[in-house]
Amino acid sequence: MKTVSLILLLAGVLSACILTTTAQNCGCAPGLCCSRFGFCGSDEAYCGAGCQEGSCFGPPPTNDVSVADIVTDAFFDGIVDQSDSSCEGRPFYSRAAFLEAVGNYPQFGRVGSEDDSKREIAAFFAHVTHETGHFCYIEEINGPSRDYCDEDNTQYPCNPSKGYYGRGPIQLSWNYNYGPAGRSIGFDGVNNPEIVATDPVIAFRTALWFWMNNVQSVLGQGFGATIRAINGMECDGGNPDTVSSRVRYYTQYCDQLGVAPGDNLRC
Image (tube, rainbow, N blue to C red):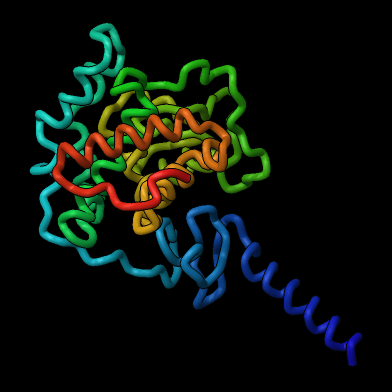
C-alpha cells in the first residue's frame, strides 16, 4: 500500500508540474489562465495581475481619488529639482508624460481608501526617486556591460544585438520584462528596448506596467514588500543602505501627502 501511495503521490506531483508548465507560449487548456510569464495555471499567480488570456481575475474596484490632484506640479517638480541641472533625465521626465501614461492604468493610485491611494503614490515615487536619482538617469549606469538575458525564456528570446539593462523610471530590466511590457503597451520590447529610453510616455508606461503586475498586489504587506518586489537582492541584509534610501524617500513623500506610512517599512 505504501508503494501504491507513493506512486500516486509522484503522479500527482508530475501532473501538477505539467499543468503549470505546459506551454510558455500559452494555448492553455479550458479553465486555465496564461500568466504574464506565459505559463498555464489557475490560481492568483496565473490568473491575477499580468494574466494574458483565459479566465483572468478581474481588477479590484477603484475609488474616486484623482491621481493628478495628488501628483501636483509642486510634488513632481520637487523631486526633479533635487537633481543636477546637467542630468539627461530632467528634460525627459515630466508630470505631463506621467499623467498621460497613468491614464492607461486606472487602478494605479485608486484602490482602497484615499490614504491607501496616497501611500501607493508615495511608494511609487520613492522607488522612482531611488532608481533614477531624482529623475536624473534614464538608463542604468554601466548597464550595457551587464548581461540581462534569460536564455531559458523561450517566449521572449533575446536579440543578441540588444541590451535589456535598466531603462526608465523603475529601470526595466531583463528580456522577460521587456517582452511582455512591449506586448502590453504596443512596442517590440525584444527588438526595440531602446524606445524605453527615448519616449518618455512609454518609459512611464513600462514603470507602471511593472508596478501593476508586480508591486500593487503586495502594498497591503507594507512598504518593505514593495522593495522585495522591485529588487529583492537588497533585502535580508543584502544592501541595507539602499533599503534605507528607499524608506527615507517613502516616509518623506508620505509626510508631504499627509498620510501615515504604515508598518513593515523594511524588507
